[in-house]
Image 1 (cartoon, rainbow, N blue to C red):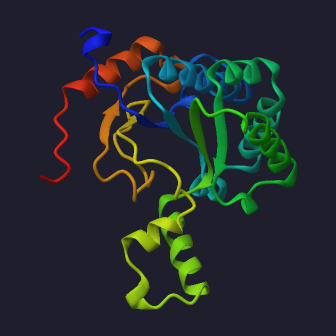
Image 2: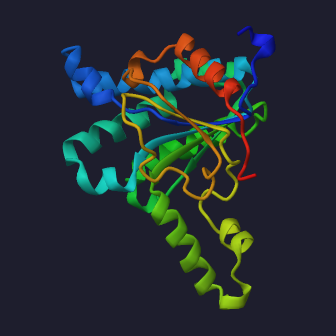
Length: 235
């Protein structure tokens, strides 16, 4: 199928799974494995914009990860997030993409030094509006809905006033567009709580490749598969 025939998903969500297994398979330490995965994510943004998509939502760290992974592994990730926020190569690629990056999640769970770095990259990219990157960090789908419910109750909402629109407006992810296509790598075939409110009619694509091995050609294959789907939205 040629590019002219492709139906391009306007909004894509990504679960970049398999970094640890890839590092182990390549006899690489976790730091270098995760660092490769982070840089691949920025390249992926460039590829996606090149195909004509408008936004990318990527799941970087779940609330479950924070509560279940070792402090050693989390500290590696936090160190890499800080490093990435000031990395000239990454900032240059974001400049090329003209992408506005937004961090979404319960940032109270993230160390202050990491939040400071993430705020820097958010401010650095705030001038751009050609592409949008939402990074889900300290995020969980159930937690997102619970957060919205608590927010409504705290505001004095009555049962009659709570409807779908009210709940959606109060999600942490309220400003994220419903993903047309969700890609998960590493052979896992589940969403694990990614965007439960927004993903009802998303098309799902599962790749057996670990995230660091996922290529531009693999993205092209995913979009080609998306183009073949008939989206009925419950009709």
